[in-house]
Image 1 (tube, rainbow, N blue to C red):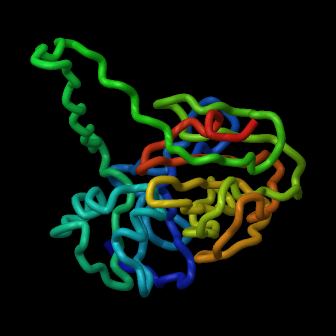
Image 2: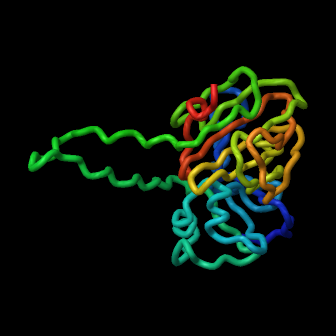
Length: 244
């Protein structure tokens, strides 16, 4: 891969949070790559890749893109999740084409006394994160979360109104690295939960800012805000987590 001139200070090619690109039912897949000519982001690296900045670590990059450090290590043929990465290095931050995400093994069946575990017992669905989120904006839900088809929701409203942080946290990305997202903000709330706010009109925060719940982080664009929640790198339905 030819190295391109870096654009310092920006988390470019943000593809780890696969937001939908419009309010239509067809999901946007920013990780899709052409076998012959990968789409290039505005930073000069292919979509689904990220150029390392000074001070970055593999775990921080993984968190910003909603991935696990070990997955990034595997995709980039690094020795471990604690491997050193260097400024200017280009990392794959999205799964390779046809990559099958490894499913965690099911928990052992709980048995009473000496009774054998029943065969065919259904494994419970992953538990949603235990975090209370506030609505980033109050408006109609133009697109709902559909497992396997979309990774977030789109909330309508008035262009220019404030988009607010759903919970307290730290900004790990604020920029326009992927055109389909428009101005995008990503906030890390804890080691498990990340929220993303896309298609904004104007950003009001910068990377590494600490934000409180309800603090304006952007101004809404004309098409509503894309809102996504990732728990341990996996997209979850935001609606059950939002306060009524």
